[in-house]
Length: 481
Ligand SMILES: [Zn+2]
Image (cartoon, rainbow, N blue to C red; front, side):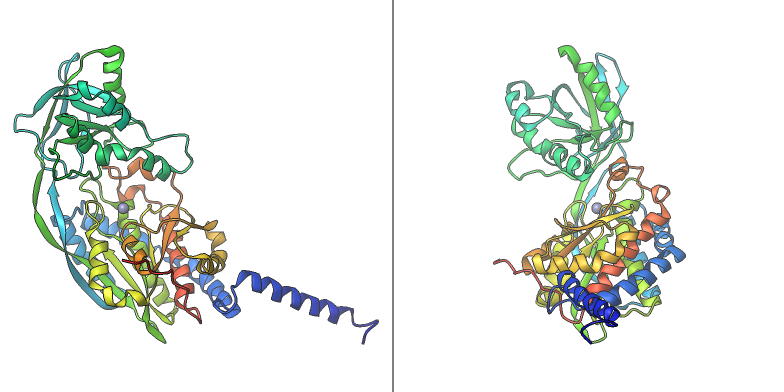
C-alpha cells in the first residue's frame, strides 16, 4: 500500500533500518553481536544492584586488613595474607584454588628511624620513614651537612658541593595537574633513583620529600633502586611539613646539619606465592581472563587501598557472578599477586608458570589505583578490541564509568603485554589516593563502602561481557621476544 494508511508501517520500517545502522556502529561487525550487548547490559544491572545490596567487598577488605595488615613480601603479614586469600577463594566456591610458588625480595625496616637537625636548631626531630630497600646507617648514625636540590640536573650542577653531604630532594608533586597519578609520575624519580644519583656524586645519604598531595606530618615510603657498581647510601622520606621546615632552615644559604639513624636489613629472597582460583567457563574453559591485584603491601598502615581493595574487588567480582548464576563461556581466573611493591616478582612468576597457555589468555584486568568511585578503564587494546570494550562498558555509565581509553593496565599484569594479552586497568577517581598511598594512613577506615562496591560491580560486568562473548575478543599482536 504505497499511499495512505501505511504511515505507521513506514515509520516502523525506518526505525528498524535506523537501529540496524546504529548497531553496526556500536558493535564491530562479526565480533560483538547484538545479543552480546543485550546480555551484558542486563547482567550489569543485576551485578550493580547485588554489589550495592551485599557490601561483600568491604567485608572482605576489613577482614584482610585486620587479619593481615603490613603485608610486605617475606614478612609474617604476607604469610598470613596468603592463608587468608586461599580460604577466601575456597569460601566463595571457586575451582582450582591453589598457591603458585615464586621467590620474593625480603627487606625489613627495623625499629630505628631518626632524622634530627643538629644545627642551626639543635635536636629538632623530623618525621621520616626509611625508603623501602634502603641500607642502614652505621649503628650510631651518620651526621652531615645538607644540600637541597629539586632535580637531578640541579644535583649534577651542584656536584662539587655534594661530596660527603646529605642530599635533600625537595620537588613537590605538581598540584596543578588534575590527574594525581601524572603528578606522582612527575616526582617519583627522586624517591626511586635519588639515592643512586646522589651516590654517584659522592653524597652519604638522601632525604626525599614525601610523595603526597597533602601538607602534613605523615611520611610516605615506597621503593628505590640501587645499582651494582654504585655505593648504596641510606635513604629516607620526610613528611611534606618536615620538608617545608628543612627548606626554611636552609633558606638564605644557612648551614644545616642532620643526623640520621636507620637499622633496616636485607635478607635472602624468601618463598612466597601467587594465590589463584577460577570460575571455569561453560563452553570455552581453555580461554582465560585474569582479574587481580597485588596481595603484598608496604609495612605501614594496612594496605587497604594499595592494594587490598584490588584483591578484594577481584574476589568479590567472581562471588557476584557465582551468586547471580552468571557463569560465562570462558574461564575467569583471579590472581592475587605475591609481590608488586618492591620487585614485581608476582607478575613475572605468573608469566613464567603459565607460559604455555598465555596464547589462550584473552584479557587481564587489574585494580591497583585504590577503592574509589569508578571513572573509567585504561587499556592497551587495539582499535577493534577497544571498540568492543567501549560497547560492553556503555551500560556502566550510571555507576560512574565515563570512558575506556588507551593506557596502561597495571604493574602486575604488564608482563603479559608482550604475549598479545589485552590489558585493562580499572581507573577510579584519583584525588584522595596520594593522601594515604604507602603511609600509615592507608587503613580500612579510609575506604568508603559504596565507592568500593561500585568498583567491584563495574569490574565484574566488564569481565562477564568479555568472557561470555559469542566470538573471542581480538588479541593484540604478540611482540617479538
Ligand atoms: Zn599497588
